[in-house]
Image (cartoon, rainbow, N blue to C red):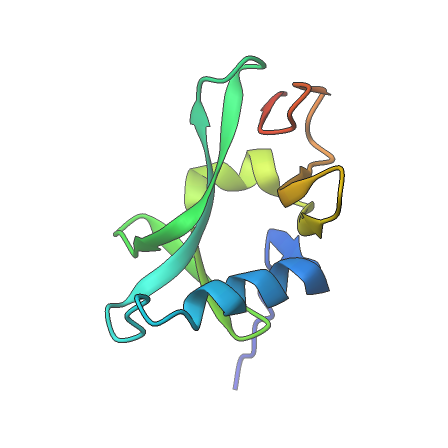
Length: 117
């Protein structure tokens, strides 16, 4: 029997896991709709590329992961930009929201939602 371990390209901190699970437990979130947490990138933003984080359906060129019980999808091509990235959730007085810590980024914008490689 061949068992292959697949490392998830991104990780979620405890704060991010708790916030995503809180969002998924809301009454208007349909757990039967096949929604996944999508992590990815798109062109644009002040540094060249922007992060994608939201709920979406799985597409043909996605790879599926399970992170702490959360179904996650990501385009195969995005792994080169996101491998090793950590997603955190901050809920403090100075900042509130998801924060991306990407070791592949050569620079980031001031708000942290876009980066350059």
